[in-house]
Image 1 (tube, one colour):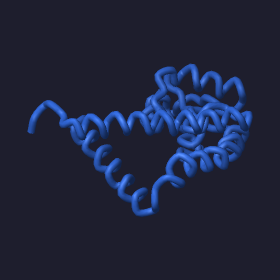
Image 2: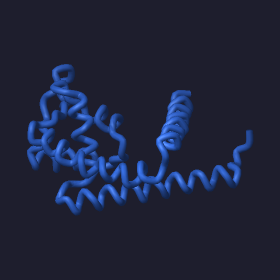
Image 3: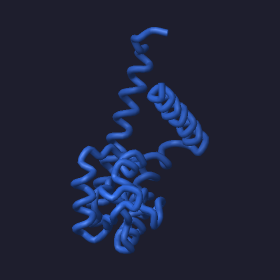
Length: 153
């Protein structure tokens, strides 16, 4: 194995990044047109909904998110000011906190989903057959697992 990627690998990498950029830009545009907040809000609220009443510690939330969020504390501050999340004291760590979605936050996440779902279909579903989508899903899963395995060593 060489440290230099093939031209095909370089092209696949560039296309992967370009496809992600175009898809996320379209989702953000559609959310904005619908008068909804950015996709990062959806991502936070979804992860908190999955966590239930237990909520998540900030580091757990960051680890669970699909989207890179370098200013998670600022994002949580905005969500808290808007009444979509609340911070609670962590029972296991007196200095720590747990973030929990409020009913208002869960309602916002549900309101955002139809716009997001249509954008996913427009970005992916309309361009690929179900077989191609399954293949892409498998390939991306292999990449994710490979990266996780590499990070663990």
